[in-house]
Amino acid sequence: AQSVAQPEDQVNVAEGNPLTVKCTYSVSGNPYLFWYVQYPNRGLQFLLKYITGDNLVKGSYGFEAEFNKSQTSFHLKKPSALVSDSALYFCAVRDIANFNKFYFGSGTKLNVKP
Amino acid sequence: GAVVSQHPSWVICKSGTSVKIECRSLDFQATTMFWYRQFPKQSLMLMATSNEGSKATYEQGVEKDKFLINHASLTLSTLTVTSAHPEDSSFYICSASPDHRVGNTIYFGEGSWLTVV
Image (cartoon, rainbow over all chains, first blue to last red; front, side):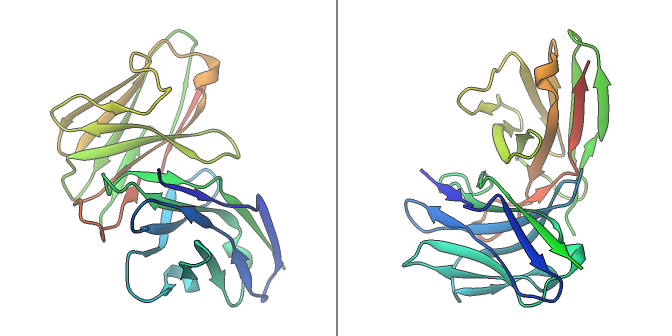
């Protein structure tokens, strides 16, 4: 079965500092991994995805994520956090039988303080 | 780019009544759409897969008779919460994609807040 885990409920970081939001995965077969962001009372916005290729994936709003097969991780990173990055972040993995079906992590609330 | 729209964004209904939420793909056709449920401060839980022209596929633990899903066209799926109760109050989100290739992107609707009083 496909699953992802986000070990941190909340991450606090000061504006301008680098941020990392952690995600580990457990899959049978090739992992298809995604990061989505959710602002309060809104739907999900796509940030980036790893399907194949380079382990460092660059996405929207300056975010990037590093796929690490040996550690089964797909951590989300940004070199310099903005207050406007404060939101709920979800890591997700695709079902291998139906590519449009997702399984989400529990979410990590990112707080960026001025 | 591809857009998925949900309606209504907010709905309040009385306990015991039914409420319908629509999910539309605005500029593409989708043979499947997905419905998720999100409780406050929790993750999204997949409820069901909506299949155009056939019955929906429900995840384990989701009541089929409670959450009726109809996918009557390639651009519209509806979720009807029947005989709603306060515990059904939640944020419901749908998703869809223009294709089923492994590298495609899924698009999510803005979500619908349901409050049952």
